[in-house]
Image (cartoon, rainbow, N blue to C red; front, top):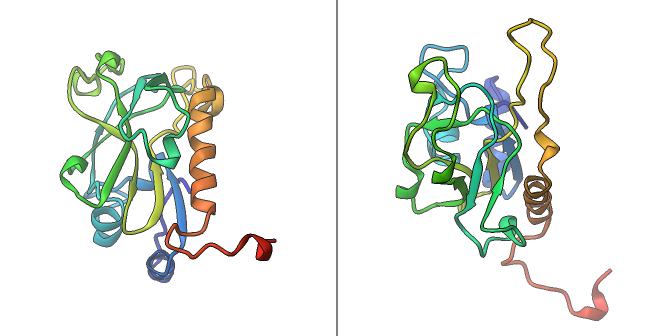
Length: 200
């Protein structure tokens, strides 16, 4: 999912689904919320409790690859990944809340400091020179994974809107996404395992 539900009925159904053990994997814009925009901060449960990130604050521009560092090596989503890897080009987001202060959040992957400066501008605030930026995380209260990746580089200058990069061009990043899907597709770890002779 790369956007959020907007209609009241959709939101209520999604919240009920997640609270009853549903699974979710969201990409990039799915976490976007900005006051006084078309996607305003009018769903506190989703952005503050479920995602934990609060509002979108800023981004890097234009979409560019980054060196990412695995922050939680023992999580199934990061299984088999190297300590650092190069992502596909992406527009990276910065958030209202520091996810490191939320005990419910497992930060799985973050931007490595070797990526700085990150972004090309032209606005100075679109080029990051330091800071801590999580890009993949999970919430222990829900079966979910959020992945900030998903915004390809596009030929805006010549107005062709031709894709200049592809989200699935990084084999290691692809492994992370497959790991996440496999993990979300499994039963909860608290479920009792069937005896071997009863498994199908």
